[in-house]
Length: 432
Image 1: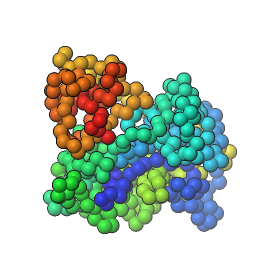
Image 2: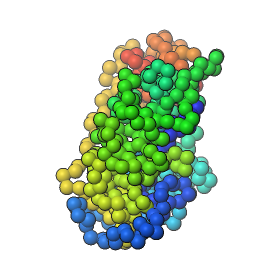
Image 3: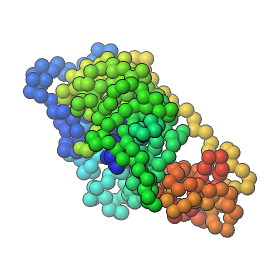
Image 4: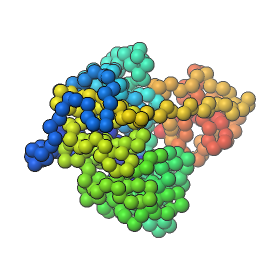
């Protein structure tokens, strides 16, 4: 999660835009291609580029293809297996293999719901009536492609701060969640070193405590012990995840940084996804990242080398399949020997559910909210079943992030969850 806010400037609401940054609509950042660059750019051919293999898929005629980020903070998490694409200013949904799911019909690019597994947002599209949502959901569910989400629920925020007084990394939940916490297992998925805003802790004097970021916002990379990765500071930063490199911004351009803190590229790249307020260069996916330089796109490897030079009108990479926009449309290619990893099987979250806790009627589906944050109204009781008549088995502190593990048909406002090592049911009335 790249760092975020100055009390709060979100540095990460990501929408991974992977198509022609020299053809950007107003909601997309990127450096337009200069006249000098256009005059010297290598002419594009529809033949297979050197070092790539034709994937044998149909050529696509879309204007842009973008990876889809979840509407959350941080917003780096991408919706695996799908892109949002545009044609004549309208947006749709496609699988990463080029299969069209929803034709281009929305006034805004699609994003992913942060609270559900496979759910899509087209927030601020005025045409999305309840009736139309129902029609779209029927179409999506028929193909096993999730559901449209109305967005009428709480979101999630998680901002990393490097405390300038204690030299420790803390987590701030943002104004909606309003809680300051220590790092947890949730944060380890983003890498050993996290992009943290420099900030100072502020006692809320009865209101929730919070962190105040420096002005201007300054980002450093630090680990859970508070150790800095290097002596550099940045305007913004992306995450390492489990990859060799990450992207960091200096002087309005992006460079790629290794796990030792050394820059393996110069700061020459443009932001490739985000909004007009916050934008980022792409993280590595399975060892490669789409990059944009002087309005032209290519593919960078884990050594910082452009294995596909920045001479194309657009690039979209999902970790195994590369789409390049050439003069006659988008062509799909693979990299020899590079195979997208198969996700590890998800452990059964109910495998250790005690007999004393009521089992759920059903597991959460793609249309259900799966991540919640408890409110600041005090400790929330965990009960043995979905209702206040059941015995209390534990408590959850205010401002805690929890996952929905199961649902009750008879009590839809309760969820089964697990806090630390304790299973129990909790009321969503006291959650966002």
